[in-house]
Image (cartoon, rainbow, N blue to C red; front, top):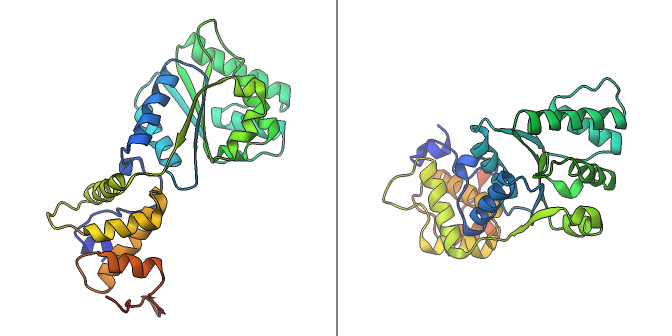
Length: 283
């Protein structure tokens, strides 16, 4: 039997995968979500979401995509890794995401095919084409120039494509140096780590989402304090340490994560043993 079933759960509550079902509506994330939705609906063109590793950018992206997927007026495309060797390589990546096969596999051929696709969908069919790019700090200079060109495709009222870049903070200076791309950014938003009260609610939300409806908590106040002190508000680090803490409960037949458990896991006061984690000395 899996460990989470032993805890009365039906699903893994602290997976680090960007599952939109486990998207906790923290204040900063929801502000980014709603502002992105407005920018896309108004067809303003380019939006930029920045944040350190583990702040929840990818989960935010998946949540927004899941929200828009059921609305037929949107065409959603995503590139998870925009690493490309040059202009043609990136255009081929874009063409593949749009399902295009130009007659001529060249820079010109791809540009014409993409422009035709955007005009047909956005102008003739009245749909909103949205391109999500994760790990956008990997965009090369030639790729950023292609994005600038795409943003030139427009009517008198709106852009033909909506581009949302999700990247680490290092993306910012790279884009700011390209004036004719920087000026086209309609929305710039930085996702910061969560506050302590939000970490508490994130843990409760994920446990409930995974099936924990008991009035008995699995993490006491001391544990939550210790998690916050360790993770400093970063969702990914929070979920990783909470996952380890639940494994610990099962391995040692305990029913509550307290500060001692978290501190033992964080400071490696546990000794590796065959098959798992050793018992902390102060437990």
